[in-house]
Structures are given as structure tokens and as C-alpha cells.
Length: 107
Length: 121
Image (cartoon, rainbow over all chains, first blue to last red):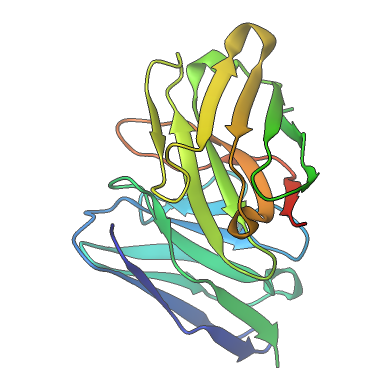
């Protein structure tokens, strides 16, 4: 199985901050990497697919980059609604695997 | 509007069975691969299973292989998961998710609200 190492585990930041979450995979997955946002009690929502493609309706302050084994999700200017848990997920090979999640909290 | 609505969760004893359903609306189910993903209380997301758009191919996580069976009825716009020999570690919210599988790329672009399965005596 492809192992996903997501960091940090948690992050405390303020509205307006720029934050970056990283995801490293145990083998190359080219750009088959997706990012999801999950709010408490809700289903996840896809933000970015294929490492850098912003999903329709997702604000442009979200961006993704990377290929191979190293990826990142950046939020350029945090808004109050962005405080949530973020997951990376590889769709290169079965079983599809997720990172352990990054909980983004208000400072 | 795309909607996925899961049902069938509940409390079951270890060794018991449950059948989850996921009713799809607002899109043509037969055009999409579909997945089940679960999340144990307070834990992260774990992929469980997927099924091809026409039902001809299925895959499972090792943790559920031989105990769970994914299926679909495109005429009824419904996805299923038959869960047998349930264990305490199967306790989780189960989500169905749509996969557009575009140009060889997969993601989960729509999710249901989830249904809670609790395995306990």
C-alpha cells in the first residue's frame, strides 16, 4: 500500500495568514493526488484534484502543487470558514489511501 | 442537484450483518464509478471499496475483503454495501462517494452525508 505522510498534524493560525500543508507519499504517484476539506459532522469536500486542479466553486485562495512524492496545499489568506480538517488522498493505486489529516484551528 | 443519501446504518452485534444503501439523484449513476469510504469516530478517512460504473469490476480494502460486498442497481439509482461478519473495528460512519474517473484520474467529487454503523454487544 502507498503510505501517506501528512504534516503538520495540527496547525494554529489567524484569519489572513498564509498556510501550507504538506503530503509525502511512499512512492511516486505522479500527480494522482487530491485534497479534501472536512468540517465537524459533515462529509468531506474535494478542493483540488490531480495535485493542482481547483474544483469548480472552490475559492482561488486554495492552491495545490507537487508531483512524484511531495505535494502541498496552500491557503493564501485564511478566512473564518477555512478552519477545518484537511486530508490528502492518492488515487494512483489501490487501495486508495488518505493522509492522517491536518486540523487547522483558529489562533 | 447532485445528491447521495445513505441509509441502513445502526447498531449490530459482533458477527452480525447490515446492508447499506446509497440513493443517487441529480445525475446518471451508470456513468460513474462509486466508492465507500469510512471514518471511525474521531479518526481519519479510510477507503473501503469501489465498483465500476457498470458493476463489472469491484475492489476492496484488505480489512473488509471476504466480508463486505459492494453492488449497484443502476436502474434503481442505488449503490449497496452488504456487510457480514461485522467486528467492533468496523464501527464508523460510512460514506458513499462519486468518482468521475476523468481521463484516468479519480477523485471523490460528491459525498453522501454518511450513515453510522456501530458494532457492539
